Amino acid sequence: MIIGIIGENCTGKSTLARAVGQAFGAEIYTGKDYLRLAKSEGEAASLFKEKLCRAAAGETIVYVISEPAQTALLPADAVKILCTADIDTIKERFKARMHGVLPPPVAQMLERKHGMFDNGEYDYRFDGAGGDPAELVAALRLRG
Image (cartoon, rainbow, N blue to C red):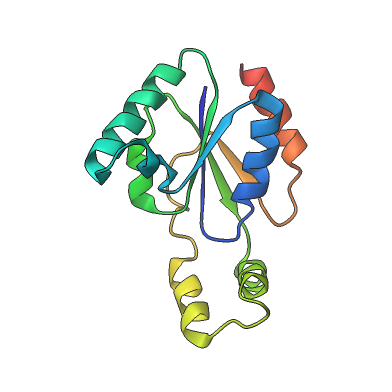
């Protein structure tokens, strides 16, 4: 099973990916981690797509996506999960990552990007501010 966990920065994608990865014994890729598969970006992307297609029949791979272009790497039958959080939560989490300081240009960038994935088609939506990863893991187990 291929599981795409999609969302903006600081919406709980990594937390959810760890829970799903542990529950399914899945390999986890984040963003452009696939670049380590080859020397050129094009070759790496091609190899990663092949890996995802082969894995659909047996193993579980979780791909954590924070840029819209990365969704194109997911096979059509991938399970797509949108992680969301309100803008204030995102800013607070990002501020913590930046050692307590959120510069105004960064805050503006987060505001511009907020909601950029909202209009896509997803199998599940996960509230990264208050959702329980165990509930989503249970739903994925039922799905098989």
